[in-house]
Length: 147
Image 1 (spheres, one colour):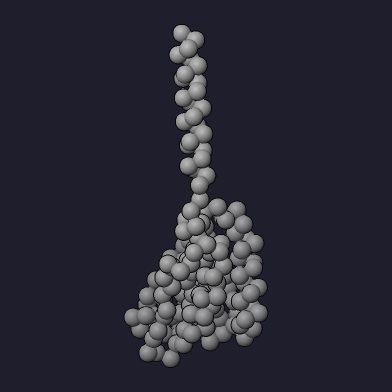
Image 2 (cartoon, helix red, strand yellow):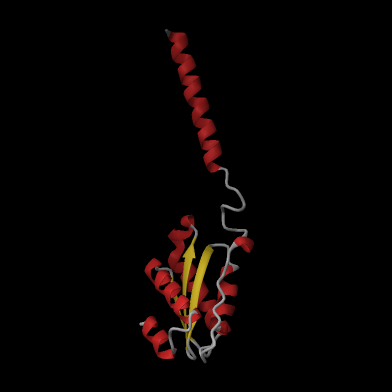
């Protein structure tokens, strides 16, 4: 009886060690440090709405290792960016948002920079990017999308 109990305890300990070891193994691609496979949609239009500032800002922001995806839209004086962060970085949302905003304000001093980590804002910016891509909106439509 005692021998069966000892074998059971050893089996459970071995199973626990294997489970913890495999759960803590973190692959390079899973951690978000390899950003080469991410697709950033470049917004191009035939309208007079130039999205080059938003596209450049996306390229700059996505290089940070904490950020997994980014959406951005700009007008002539405003730049709105929504970012997604890795799951374990969600505890530092305010700090990441503040760092991104300060970096972009330095790069684009003539634009009012608005940065958000809100998922609803991310989805709405995605829809706004698609409208701009399809040439279904104008500068006033973008401003309404901002507020």
